Length: 349
Ligand SMILES: Nc1ncnc2c1ncn2[C@@H]1O[C@H](COP(=O)(O)OP(=O)(O)OP(=O)(O)O)[C@@H](O)[C@H]1O
Ligand SMILES: [Mg+2]
Image (tube, rainbow, N blue to C red; front, side, top):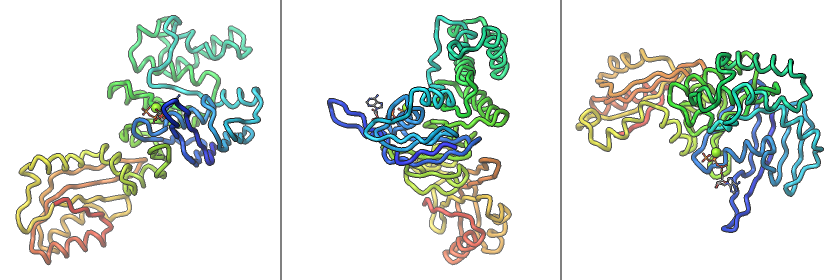
């Protein structure tokens, strides 16, 4: 388990101070894929760099797995170099730009962190081959990074990060430089490493689609603070903060409706007696049969403009943008019916 308590980090620049991490408290359980999302400058990289003490926080408490609790005050900790090294080896890290050694082969890149571990050459060779197999790159052992695609480079970086058998992998925008197909394959690899090795993954991204694809938990950062946190499903079904809503919308095909409204698209143009609404069906609601039922029993018409069902963390989350038409009383009746069926309704026009 990783516990972060009251963590703070301020950079002191000539132009003034930048508080990059402010009073952050997080608990990440073993085996979780925990996402941290935020816009550029929110403090995501600072937070993970503080987590493995690549960057020394100003203050806070870090408790990582079975290591002794690290108390940091005034930018200092009493942890010995030995304990610090042990703690760092327990956490591998991967980056947006891979950070590979261009003049070394794939084999040597992966072997690099093992060089000073006291392992014999034979054991290193065996471990590297095992890692190459894990990331499906056995045929690339003797090539150089420049001869690899972006996705393959990230696989090498993942293998290198796992060389010392860490229990935690920190991933800082690891898919941001990749095309959608390579992103998909790296996310699939991360999910499978999480499942087969029980690896805990802390995954930083600015893309809600990445969170949706593989995370169970998510924290939203803004201005150094964690402003919202919880299960990915709950955050998608019920975002509370404005910034979270923006992220959730960015990953939803239904958010196209706002553009359609702006452009006065005929599909979203409503006439008197009509109402444009967005309906959200989460796993607790009665289901989409409600739609036909409402139409029948309340005497209204529903014209579907956009519809979508996502599977998030194994559970369905559906949404629909629809034009309702009928008498004011019947529309009112329909809205009450939706509410009773626990369907969330937001009026758009
Ligand atoms: N080494 C540093 N020295 C000074 N200021 C820094 C340093 N690293 C980050 N900052 C500042 O701290 C704030 C948070 O930066 P950070 O890199 O943690 O954000 P981020 O959320 O990772 O952004 P991005 O999505 O662009 O990677 C920013 O205002 C940034 O300019
Ligand atoms: Mg960053």
